[in-house]
Image 1 (cartoon, rainbow, N blue to C red):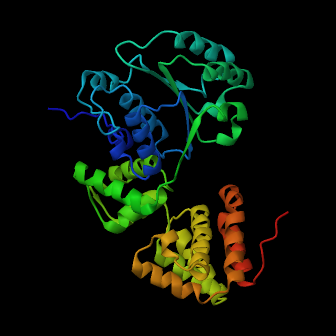
Image 2 (image 1 turned 60 degrees about the vertical axis):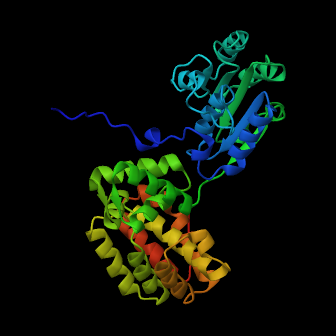
Image 3 (image 1 turned 180 degrees about the horizontal axis):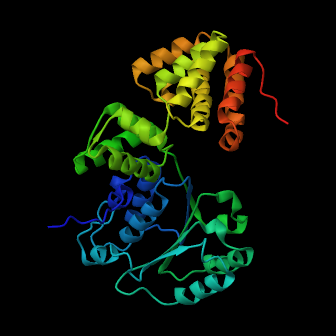
Length: 371
């Protein structure tokens, strides 16, 4: 029998179904659950925050929860007929609108006409407008009229990654909730849980590397995990993650910065030669070098560096020791040199030559001069 070739992405397969399953946004989910239980709902909500932090997932949970027939916890029960019906992606009582492709005033006028119709088989119609900042000025004006006096059975949820682009008139009519980026620890817990359910064996350090690469986004973290698992096929090691992502091992960065701090030009050029010969992307290495300098600066200047860095103890120990060998001024200069040349390195005719000049500038205690 042929195996199915259809693969459901991990971030879609493990999208949370209740408020309790949402990780890292308890300040929002608890408030929403309490509002539902108390029957004190707003007619418009604004969900803002970085991509992949759960805005749309929470909006969908909320839409089901306000219509749930047996809601005792604030979350949808998932068992009643209404919950089962609303779980379908195409239910007419939960309307998702992508403002990026429906941003004209005519689109909002059409929405205003449809708002007049009562929900069918539910208490509320919930409109989820994603990337709402993409609406045109005239579309915002048309939406404002609907937000001011919507029918009692309609709830709007506006989601955006760029809240500063929304007019003040829209902001003033919404209950605002700010979604936070997740910590590496929280993302690691999500990954561990998903891997356990999927029967994927992963080294603890591999999990932390994937979590760190997700940069606070659950969706990005699970997408990276998908890519790494496709390569590793069920047994993920630290080396697999480094190979797939192109990121740099801690030991390699520590050795490279040892040469810079020791002002060993020959040693630095040899390191770059070995990195280049291994086939590593030098632009990615420079980005990792900028981050390494920043991590050293945190070790040097912060009272509790691991609250920010979230590293294994043995790695933190090596970072602390290296940070002690450089001054604050040196570390800031290293970080500025490598970070400011990231775009230039990506398109340079000779990435290696530019990386070598950056490293030598660090050794000589100079900021790389830009034209």
